[in-house]
Length: 492
Image (cartoon, rainbow, N blue to C red; front, side, top):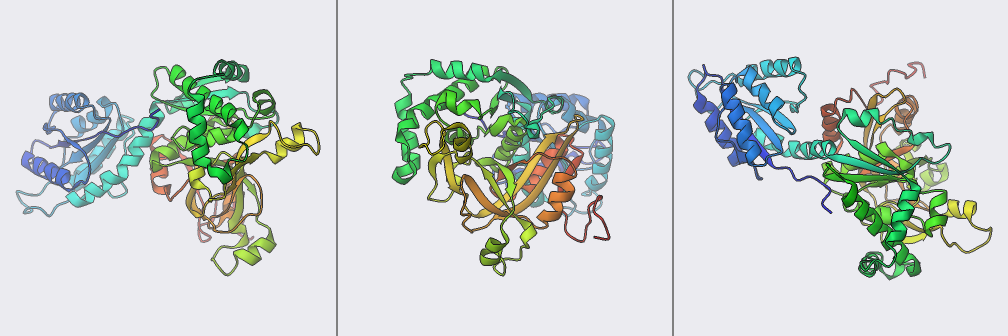
């Protein structure tokens, strides 16, 4: 199942009729030549509204789903902004720097034109992507286009996404409260189902002829040391096929699907296993399955998958690092303070490709205590993928709709330390600069749930632009010490 969009990019040059049109044409050709990727060069240079209609028709027929509007000279304010209104997809506006001709007949004044362009976009209430410094040479703009691709991919994905839930959320789990108003505002569809619907579909997949092949794939992924419970692989394979078939049969008018599923307390006893390992496998294929019916967690994961083009995960911002462990393994080896560190954990949903080599299918210790006889061997609480998460750069982030129906978000870049946790579940020691202050003045102060999405790499810049494109006004981040939070006590 293909679940991440492919960006098919086009470029349209615009020209104000009192400036030489050849400037825009020549400069557009130079950008196409400098860009190291596929981009459709629209042959129509837009000077008026009829040109605009022809150009949008042209790129649409070429199946472009994202667009660069290039001001090769000052540009015509009305038709250039109408391109963004008429085109069905994310649009970036950039402008030409001077330097490729004389400053009399070869001056384009696109630096000035971009101001008028942005003013007109605002009057039309059009949301587009404008880079941090949108004026440049062909090489400069080629680099801007490279940065636009993951942003466009995420916007296309969100606008064509359906979130499928099986719930409701667990009792006393207000952390997963999810007003759907925010989903509709950014164009996401939602289908909410009962656990009974899922169980009925799961039972219908019993003896599915595809189960042996999925079991073999699972065994190959886990290896001998990671496959602790081969007897439950058929059950988990049956569940994996159930979700994949449900996605295909229920995505309806949408192209992409993510899940937010209830995974306790009834699930393991009724299905006969924990769903975590299956969830991890789907996440590795760009189909996040968020734990505990965390709808905005699933959405956040999906945005990260689109931006990074890689597997993501959803983790609890779980527990502090013991001072003894910090003193022994972290202090003096890094610049992080104890309060910069924390452990992020979930039962076993992180893809195996992001975990240390000794990861393995195990059992959910907490659920075993709760649901199975004391002192018994684990039975239906088996099915988690456990081990330490591999060290490396990460971005911790979340898009959330609060209890008032307002979208807000946070982004924090950091890393997973190469330090054994000595704990259970899928877990890692995370370090984020000034995490202690961020924890208090963003996560607590703004009432965020304990679930955070994790992208494996530094993607803060692209995430910030995606959230802006989605009209999220509150985008918090881990501010440096010299930049106090609004709620931070200056006398502390």
